Image (tube, rainbow, N blue to C red; front, side):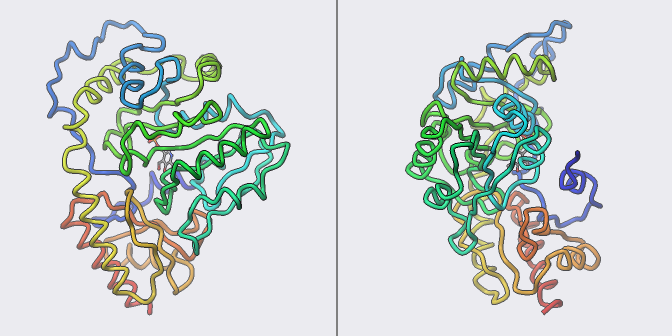
Length: 354
Ligand SMILES: Cc1ncc(COP(=O)(O)O)c(C=O)c1O
């Protein structure tokens, strides 16, 4: 078992104008008031480090007992699924999906079923469609909000409808919210919609702090306790200096966020006018988030990515990594001048392939 997508994402040759990144520019923590004492390197490990859990609980408007910390959203997703899935359990996962969600469920022996997020319907979360795939055997429904790769936003009404469908068959809903804070205030998390919701998130995508590996799960207290106990089999505790740094980051969260919302808005606007100018791309206007997932009329986008790399020192994520080969994913996290240059190179490559 392995993730070919993650391997590709980590080790693909670097290019100057990469549209593959799905996070805001990295934040340098040395711009915050940090002293060596903040790292508390006394050798102790701190089980369920309370100050970090309290800071997360405050920010997301949930009880401390609902917060489990984990190494990134990645481990948060794995732990949440491991606590909820036994081999043979039916798990309903969105399509198209972030590969690691499928990989984790498959590793745990789930019987994976899919529900569609239709490109023609702007990848909207459609509870009526989902209802057709749910069964008495469904134990878990898995989705991303914002949707990776399209950045479609699921509203409270649709999420609650899915929560009700899940509750009716005794299932839970895992919502990976790693991109959500770029669109809504943090207290809009699905974790507040009811005990059937289990939410994962981190300081990675929207905060530019992927290096901290500060992730978390928000779940009802009994499930949260089970996840803590399960984590004793894996990481046991987090790296404590990273927990301390995460507390500092959360204390200064407005500085961490900085101008990123303006940057993303500006790049999205530039992207939207680029898409409008092209007859070979179909893409809903980008209104939120850090990524978009257009469809190219030229076919398999591996060809596009290969040309971008070979001739334009640029790159996109080919759609095959998100189960739709004629699409590709672009990220809006580059500084604006680089983003505009990258998009112009994309336009030149598309013209060459016309
Ligand atoms: C939907 C989704 N979840 C989780 C992750 C990983 O996040 P983290 O760096 O917090 O582990 C990614 C990264 O691409 C992602 O797209």
